[in-house]
Image (cartoon, rainbow, N blue to C red; front, side, top):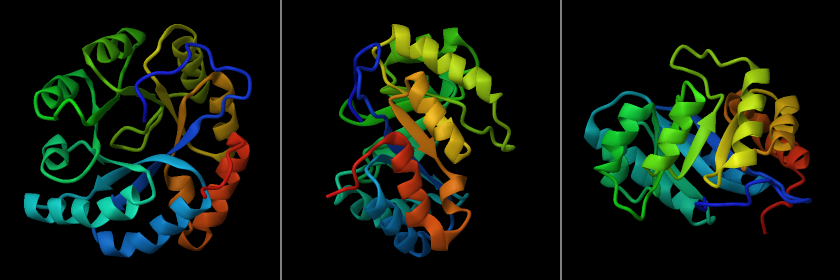
Amino acid sequence: MGPGRPSVPSEGFSPRIYLVTPRIEDAAALIDPLVAALGAADVAAVLARFAEADEGALITRAELLCPVVQQRGVALLIDGRTDIAARTSADGAHVTGLGALEAALEILRLDRVLGAGGLRSRHDAMVAAEAGAAYVMFGEPDPTGRQPGFDAIVERIEWWAELFEVPCVGFADSLDQVALLAGAGADFVAVGDLIWDNNKAVARTMRAVAERLMLEPPQ
């Protein structure tokens, strides 16, 4: 995930897919559907969300998934656990809130990707970008599963795309939202549960996302 892009997407610009995993307890069980997803559409990054476990188990999960993702030219990011990202082959981490971002910047090396979400205001988003976030995310669910109103997400992305160089990720909860976030100027469109709700349809749903983003399938 590159650090910059045109402040206003150019004609023909297509956002890339940011794939968010379900909460992972058994990383081995996720490999087949993950491979199906990555084979069906061009993905920029995978955000691995781990269920609670001790540090050793989390490291094992991350190291199992890293080659599956990275050998396809896709970045693997760890959700929340910057310490695990720092101790594994992961490409970086995603954190929630400015406090977590400040702490994470002291842990991850400069060559790792560090993204920020859970940004409650425009000011918070600007502070995160100025502090060194590689991207900002708008619209992701909170720990209870609640999301901001979709109109507010679109408005925030339009504002960001018009003014800032740091990329933004918009979180889509449905296929219809995918195209709307792309039209608003998101650099990446995050998809999560809508992909994993039916493991037998992962590839088909990923292709549907790619079609809405006008992306070519991976080579």
